[in-house]
Image 1 (spheres, rainbow, N blue to C red):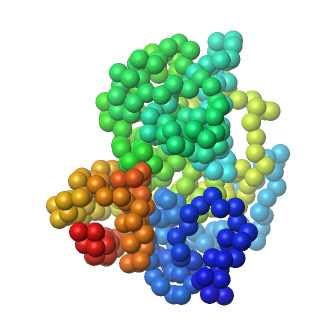
Image 2 (image 1 turned 135 degrees about the vertical axis):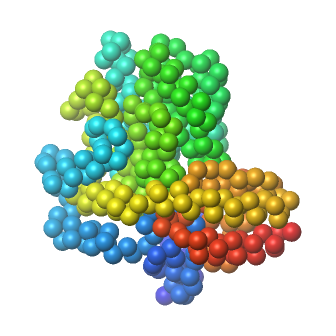
Length: 398
């Protein structure tokens, strides 16, 4: 079939909720994707932060192939070696204690919210607790996750959402203090805001929120679905702040392409919140995805990818400096590690589309931020190629 025939076939049968670009990807290798015509695309999106090892990694592929031959699924009524190994691996790299595996990041958010509400209801002897979330945040598209997403255009068509949610301003501790009461069960925030424009948390802000939660008995939920698993130069971004959450949500690179997420909690929270019957999932934590999680944790650590990100980040940031100096419409850049945003005063959508024509995959974050999420294995040569391609793209907007 031709590219157009594949696209026509998809549009005939798929619910049109994505505005897809006119490309049909066939396979990937290393840091490149290839379409059905054989054209190569340098990937600076990594499937929205998923493909940390790039594509067709032999060790990872072998682990999944072997597991697929042995056992794909039982249910959570039984133990498997893979769920035990994956839970131990994730607890180790996160520094938290107890794991619940989900099918996605949004489901991890749902579980985190339920856990915080149950913890507070058991402690206080009543329900009806509130959650503080952040403006310009993004936590997912289920009703619960939308309820704590601080971006109006994602939320408004689906009102009424979950009640009891109050919004503070990210990196503004006074705005969190103004919302905090003894009835707040949790504060939820992204350690690095992604969809909201690539904003890392200020160290003083994150520490201040941690202290407020301790003072009022609220739980701190850190959403590291996008920024976790080595992307910022540590396994989880919070590990660079000297702050520890009560609940961590994680997904994307956790499974390196296999659909899996998790929320991870401290022993204190685990012992006084959800009990059998409170929460569950049919597919979450099945043998295939847990084989992926265990291998993901192993390979990211064994290959020193967080350290590699630390080494490469200055070079990537120098490249972004080049764009800011060269183009009047490129005003600044911000981010952590391999999660970077280039701020533009021109609409970013056409830039993303033009980059695709040039064989470069990049993303947007809002209307004015060009988002770069390369695979964690990206080397200087790839950054140089990105610079060359993106220069041609941006030149066309001068």
